[in-house]
Figure 1 (cartoon, one colour):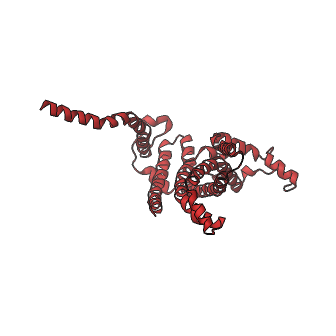
Figure 2 (cartoon, rainbow, N blue to C red):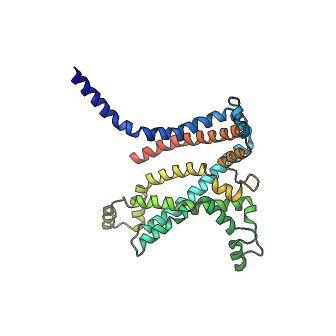
Figure 3 (spheres, helix red, strand yellow):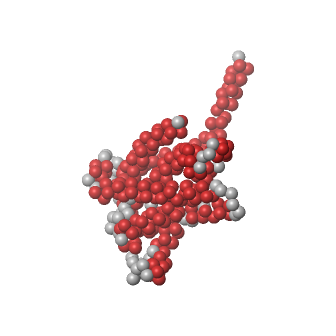
Length: 300
């Protein structure tokens, strides 16, 4: 009996051994993800202020009810949607032809592929400051070029205009994020079997027909996956917008994430947490429906 029980315990230990190996990283992930999430939800249900957070009182859904009457928050949702569509759309529009070019064989291709990633590895705060200086109303190089070309008669304060500042921030973020999408699309392009293109060429297919009927169908799952990730990242993006505009002029660039960050700066931790929780819930529901569609698309 002892030998049988010892064998069963040894089998149990052997089956549990992989879980013991991943237990430390599992605990670490819980510590850095689950605990902050729960704590943020708790703060959103309190009247916590930064200087008196230890004395916070439970107020239920008062912060969330206040958001329903907060026009700045409601407008920030539409600004977030505009921000996501503009940035992600431009990134995909530019990254796809760049990835197609980098997939070709030419001299120095390895160097060009490595150089493309440089904008992405530059910190976004540095990128934001660089673009602010480029479009500065007093000494910006963009104004200087337009002035020399005779397009404008005097320096223009681009960052003081709501539409101009938004366009510049979108351009800066697109310049910073496009290389990552390019590399991902390039990796997806290299998984497409060359036999398909050769067979299509034998059948008389043109370059455009190959692109529409071979390249795009194989890239669709990757593009859909990239869009989901970038929308989530852009919805939570703060540094580029805040460094370049501070959310202004006025409320022109107040996305939901920026509004939450600014409320934190005003020491209203409970209300800013409620904004962040609402944004997380919206993104979660969108992701659920999107992933269902993505899975169907991949299966097809």
